Length: 250
Image (tube, rainbow, N blue to C red; front, side, top):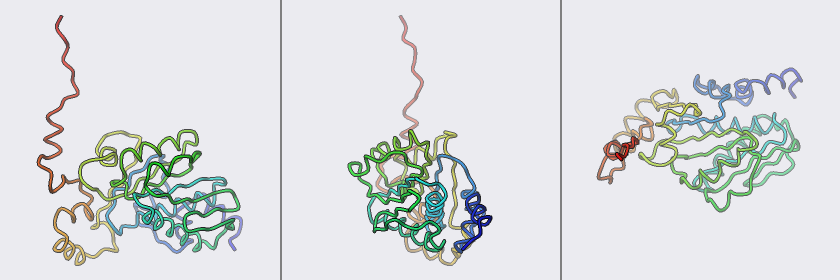
């Protein structure tokens, strides 16, 4: 049982909360945990810890912001459940400081009114939620544009937070466009496998040999690459169009 002063420290500092549940965040993870940005893109290599950090954000919000609704969205229900399992693991590691009201395979409801809900990536099944405190979109590069468009209004009234995490998957879709544009609304993190102290150079060399350069650069070095079956490069296609409109002569 933590003291009132210790509990206040955990409420105010997510890094301290991470340490309390047995994690030792990397420097970029500390920056993310202490960030107050409302829109965040995590372009981070596989096994870099991005899902764990988002799970930590979700659990912290549920515990210390009563009546919060946290939604976990992925392209498939199985993927959403994996992120949800990380949340449950972190909640249990914190010794359940707020008792659960109910716990299912898809939802954790706490006595303070907060809920963590995992959802499948289908536009028809995610409507109806509102007042979302945190919307986490996992494998964001594979989430269709129409699904993304359908969930953004959930944050309209609540002013909630949107965190989208993924590795790249080609040069298309809303997540790619959000990453490459210069819109200041997004706070961006790019962490390659070389920057993760838990991934060895030997493992990366083996992966490069076995999965091929295209997959390797996307999954481990966070690069947006044209599809291997694409006839023209994305940059060549973009160069064919101009946003300038010539004036009409009268």
